Amino acid sequence: MSEAEAALERVTQVPGVRGSLLISGSDGLVVAERLMDGIDGRAIAALAASLVQRLDRATNHAGMRAPTFVHLRGDKGSVLAAPGRSDLVLVAVAGLDANLGLARVQMLDAVGRLV
Amino acid sequence: MTDDIKTLTARLADEPASLAFLELGEALRRRGQVEAAYKVARGGLARYPTLADAHDLMGRILGDQGDLAGAFDAWAEALRFDPMRIGALKGIAFLYFKAGDVPAALEHLQRASEIDPDDWSIRQAIDRVRSPTQPAQNASPKPEPATISSGATPSPADPVSSNGHVEQGVMLVDGNGLRLNGTLLSPNNEDVGDRVAAELSGVSKEASRTSRLLGLGTWQAIAVESPEGNLFLVAPTPETLLLTVRDSSLPMARLGLMAERAAREAREWLARHT
Image 1 (cartoon, helix red, strand yellow):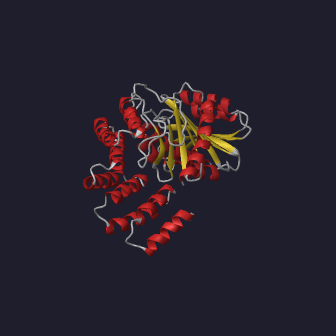
Image 2: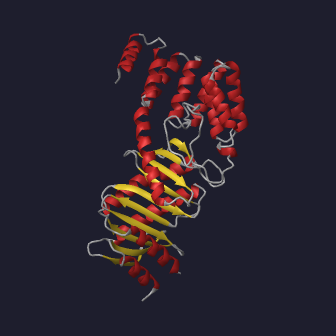
């Protein structure tokens, strides 16, 4: 199992997480994915990359370094994103019932292991 | 349209050469109808190009519109025709303060204070500009806990806050990326509010699009962790965005609660000012 697949495996095992994917932060393309049926990985990748890029610029203007974790909360679920090295971003889609704290810990740990 | 605006509009229609445009422009501005206020003020200035009151009014309107260079020019014109125009002195002082030029801000406020020594709001403004908590001289390396509240932060049209306290780390931004209220300092105490506000202009739309397309419903909040601090974004209204920034030692859940409370206050503030 590759490092990317191992990272996705760990995240999708968290209760309530519907899927995860590894994307390229600069162009929003999917590098690897592990998603439930019916979830469009390309859309998630494009949207998450765009949001993370914008927030990256905002933190930069605020005199801070790039975000290490982003959580977009909707009233029916969440998107989590953990930017890592080499322009990679680990993204997860979670339902309302998800254990978001555990998902965050797993994502940060997993993305830290990626080269 | 409220009764006073109706009455003033009618009076101006009956007597186009009257000075009713001053009251009408100000009433519209206070109601947040700045485009209408601008048209009224422009009409009045065309008729009375040397009237300091009219230039002062235009300065406030342009300030509300975020045209700070235009506001500066308007207030400078007001002072040209009336060097003792306190509103223009306070307005220019605010713009210098906002630009980080504290000596120039103090000079204008002191001139205003000499003209009206009994005006407590000018003294408060001088104290605040001299205060170590103001952006250019803030000794604290990180934003202090604060919430947004009515009148707590100076606006271009009201340079002197009601309590003389500058709120930090909470900022209300409109849909065009313009700062409506609040202050944001970088870790090295630079006022970065306007730059960050401009960058946040599209975040609300981006978040709405992402939530909708991924079946996550209506977006509620965005939490952002960074090594230097945590950011929390909520939308008090569909047209505005509230950013709360704190040191990363504050747990994100607590920051979220703080942001929700600030959003409630922001809604009240917006209701009073729009």
